[in-house]
Structures are given as C-alpha cells and as structure tokens.
Image (cartoon, rainbow, N blue to C red; front, side, top):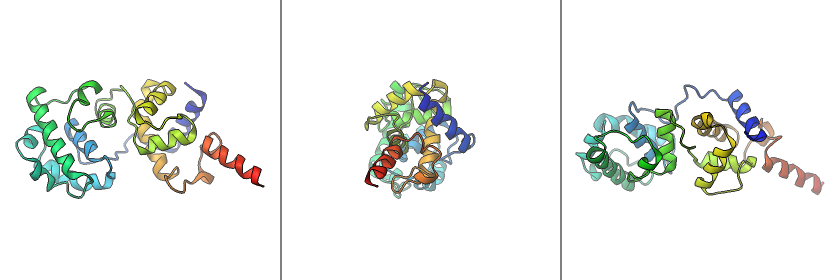
Length: 219
C-alpha cells in the first residue's frame, strides 16, 4: 500500500467509528438497500431516509414494486431529486429482478449495473455494505473531492478515481473507504470552506501544502 494511503487510512480509522454507522436507514434486505442507494443519487441521506420508511412499508420487495406503476411509486418519493426517473427505474429494475433473477439480488458488479438506473457506485454500496463483497469502491462526491485534494488521484472521473484508489488501498479495506471518506467530508473536508486548520490530514494533503506554499511566497 502507498505510504500516504496508509497514513490516510490509519488516521481516518482513528477518528471515525464506522462499525455501526449507517448513512442510509430503514432497509432490512439487500433489495431495499439497492433502492435506497438508487434514491440517494443527487439527494441527501436525510431526504432518502425520510421517504424509505413508508416506501418499504408499502413496497417491501421486488414483486410489490413490479405489481405497482411508476406513477404510484412517485407519490412516495416526491421529495427526492429526480423522483420521476427514479420511480421508473425502480419499477423497471424490480420487473427485471422478478422475471430474470427470481427476485434475488445479483452479487457481481457486472450483473448489478445491467439493472435499470444502477451504476458502479450503487452496485458497490450494495456489495460492500450488505454482502461484504469487495469488487470495487463506491465513489461519491465526498470520495471524489477528498481523494483529489489529498493527492490520491489526479482524475475527476469517478471510474478512474475508483481504479486509482483500488491500487492504493488493500482490498479488505474497500468496503470501509467510502464511509470513512463520507464521515471526513461531512465533518472537516467540506465542499466549501473546508476546515483545513483542524484537519488531521493537513500535513499530507496536497491542496493544503500548495496553499501554504503560495501563502509563504506572497509574504
């Protein structure tokens, strides 16, 4: 493992207890986690958690979604961004699961991303968090931002960032990388006005090092 990556992982683990932390809530099956993760695109976890309790009470499994209609699903997720597209994708993927997988959730990225509305990030969330299968790393906006700032990647494309991180971190840590980065992104490495002065990674963060160097030159 890259020395910087090793330091990052060690320090994040020291500061954040993620063993029992769940960002998405109200799910009790891998299918429900899949739906919740799909809903989280361009929406906050809070927005998703606010709708999934009633949503899963009404539609607990693929068969119940497949027996409904996109318009009906929309009524339960209106407060979530892009709700019309998401309702259609949930309906479509539920039908695929019922008809082609006997309502079971595929356990590989290659099969998961064939489902309507499911990309690598959502697929990795389900595999990592539910099945404890590490095929990749879920790259959300926090992972993307922090990886670039620290200098773990020079890429901005999520797929390329995922590839870079998979080379840097041991495979048995891939399932926790996303949760660690999300925790750090929400508490310290904010999108706007990051708290660099109190960040425990500021001595190895390329963005912070460059900022300090430029400040010294000006003075």
